[in-house]
Length: 259
Image (cartoon, rainbow, N blue to C red; front, side, top):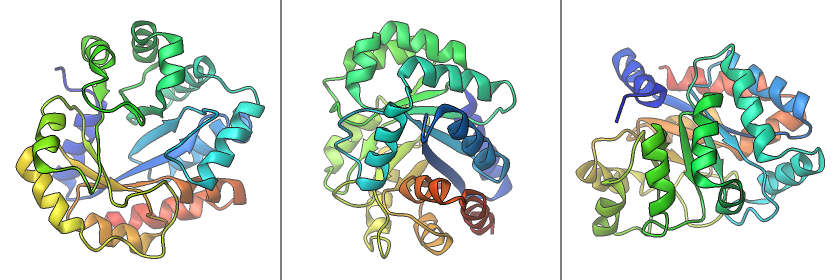
């Protein structure tokens, strides 16, 4: 597969001795114009990779913060098609990798082949599907691969090594390791078994490993990044955007990860 922006970004981070900052923001929250302004602010202040959340009416893997963001976005009229238009608008000014992060229903309804073609045309680099288990996503992954999009896998703390090897043999871009069992949302402290799980994943793949679900500040990002190649921050960014403190949080975390 041709190296795309995601792989290039991780090579750049490794060469610079830095850990990556992957940030999630919901497309269209609280409205389309404000959403784009918030994303641009994040990209201008240290975000290395953008996970663009595609709003869905039943985001079962997400906690209250991102559920509320999805509801606000849907109420503002955001759709998958408009999300792709947002990607195209951002791509005019940024070379930052962009991943479409969402649930199967909107992707299936749009059409896998059509979605992959339109995503590439807009400037997206990968897709992460939350609610389709490996083995049931063959058609979608085949379309991603044919289009040059990375298929980003999710690995849970409960995933056995044999299953991880199977999943990661078909993965591209990077591995998203979920630190906790449960939904997205800020936690008081970072899980204490990250090192053990990251070591197992290193034995299964050469892809970079990002850790997420529960990181809400610079201190937690520093702890999580010790063993991983990047951290993923979602709910905390969504909340900061709503409170008007997005720039400060992005700057804080990016400065910590650069040390």
